[in-house]
Length: 149
Image (cartoon, rainbow, N blue to C red):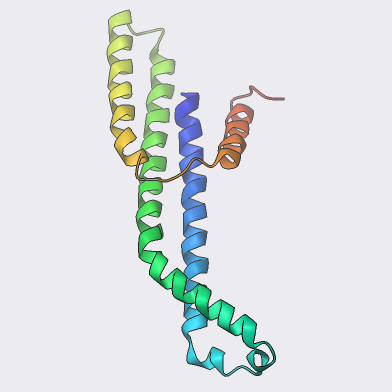
């Protein structure tokens, strides 16, 4: 249950990170590709800066389809939602555990494990392991569940 909570929080934060990267990249490209930007008097005094930013813009325009932030954002958003569902499944299981037989509890646990297993493929489409973000989410989970002072 705590792992599902952690994954829900982690993929929520990761989706936010992807959204910001996508937004800032597109704003930068839009600004740098605008012809009016080239006419700013500031660039006349700093031609190296203009050339550098133009070069970065060109490389970024080529890399943007490879980075594919919208696809990563969609995958992270789906993982966030699916892990939230799994977390709720665990919470319901814990709430019913005293009333269920051992077999009922085991069957329900297997069903939840199968749902988690199906997410492994989708997780592989979301790159990287942001250890700092993961640590922050772990602290949130511990606090939210009264396991950290």
